[in-house]
Length: 315
Image 1 (cartoon, helix red, strand yellow):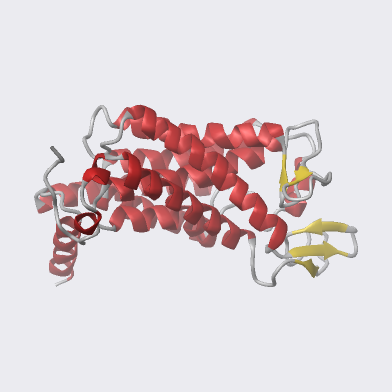
Image 2 (cartoon, one colour):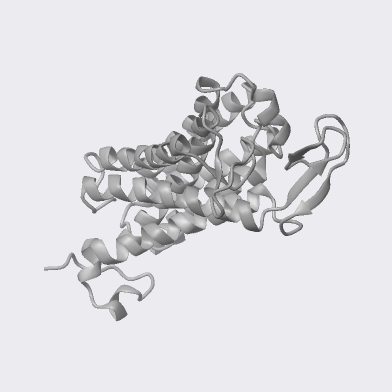
């Protein structure tokens, strides 16, 4: 009975995406996605990069992405998770303990962090197939990857960051700050995701935009997504204070064991919420680019937005 239900779900997903693939092809991708994401989740858990719930989140997003999308979609997701795991270890600053004392959850991503970073992209790849959705997927991952690279590379800057809105000098590690090195890192992180999509285009026809468009979309989404993250971090993200260590932090309980108190921002708006906003901003950027630059933008708008319907390529 469970197998029959799973089969009907796969058939429905295949129909909604308009792929025309046989059900066994979709099932094969699901098995590949489950196996690959399980292996990555397990290794990341063993290395301390993911918590138990974070590993579960990686398995869920990886399986759904590979099943509903393509191997290129899966490669982009793997590239994001692999890069966000390896980069902090490659560019770890000498005062990393101070940065860990500021970050809300340290270096181990949990389920909510995984979903905040990869959940929007997963929803877009499950949605009905279109170039706008595919570019939205690319840009959503590029935005969060760009933000991750901006954070990690920005930590190595010898120049203190500046408040994104006021320009005042900030203590390194405080949300809402930007630096030249971090900004360049955000563009590079977004371009990295775009490059994976451009490379995958040579093997799979899913992404119809030109390689240069894919690369540019990733770079733009990485830079702008990271900027949105900084603006949200400077305005609405809750800011906490440890009276014992006399320092700002994002932790409910500081590393010294002292309960922190809110001194700014909106209560409940954590870094996970800000990351979700970054991902949504990236998705919007990608879908706009897909709407106006892809081949589908030549179709009449009323035809383009009709759900679950396939169209011949424009003349």
